[in-house]
Amino acid sequence: MIRGEKKCIGLIFGGNSNEHDVSISSAKTVFKAFNSEINNLRYWVKAFYINKSGDWLDSDLSEKILIGESENNKTKKYGTLNQKINFLEGVEFQDVDIWFPLLHGFNGEDGSIHGLLKFTKKPLVGCGILGSALGMDKILMKTIFSNLKIPQVNYLFFQNQDHHEKEVKNKLTSEIIKKLNFPVFVKPSNSGSSLGISKVRNQSELLQALEKAWEIDSRIVVEEGLEVREIECGIIGNLELLTSEIGEVSHENDWYDYETKYNLNNQITIPAKIDSRTTKQIKKIAIQSCKALNIYGFARVDFFLEKSSNKILLNEINTIPGFTKNSMFPMLWRASGLNIEQLVAKLVDITLDL
Image (cartoon, rainbow, N blue to C red):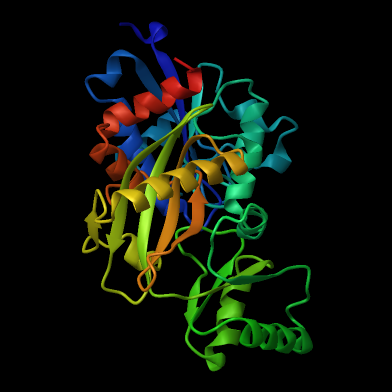
């Protein structure tokens, strides 16, 4: 099949985000999957790398990053938004039939890239602006889940406050101590890969954790820490959402921080060793929560399973989960019968409603 008869996949990666490097790793996996023998008959990939300054590189240089011939941020750039009247003027996207954005974290997974791509009038893999924004924002996500009575850990959130004021800091710490039991997790409302998150064991560690989260976002979530199992479920589909096998991540560290998430020594169990009733309930909540936030296409839904009670607690939804070799999302679907080559093709078919 000649190139003109194939679908062109516009693969966007990198980005002005603290998850820049993870995005590159994910894109390398997806790029390789689309260039496999079976997918090469249907698709060709046009790569679009966005460096840490937010500048778009041309597709040739972008592809060199994916195949390891060029280093990140060591290449020429198109120029910044301020230098162009039409931001997309220098981005040759006309050949693209369908976008596949893999921008983890803010300026991508938060709906930003979805809004931009909407103006190209090309379909994209994943959910739209609303679902992406809600899935990324922990405060709004948790508020919606609370109203729907979906079980979560006890939490507080703080926003629209001047956190530079000592009086404000004292007020927030007092409220946390009064309403939540230690340990607690302090999180930026908008971040991913556990970046900016701290586990706080006592009052003396609280202020430092708040300062760390504030470096990423002025809006903060504080959650009560429990003894839990880390359970994850993959979702794909549009009107009908399908669930993957349930997986469990076991790790030696005290909690599932950034370094732990990408540690090769983590123990992954798929399917998780849980009873059929719990499995069924987790899948039901996964679908319910995605529909509540208008999330479709693909996502990974993360749960806690409290060890003492076996109670299911919804943690969060990732609307652009990782595709690295250590990422749960492709592993969950591989265990469900879709290898990575089949998975990326399935996501395109879902988007095109094939």
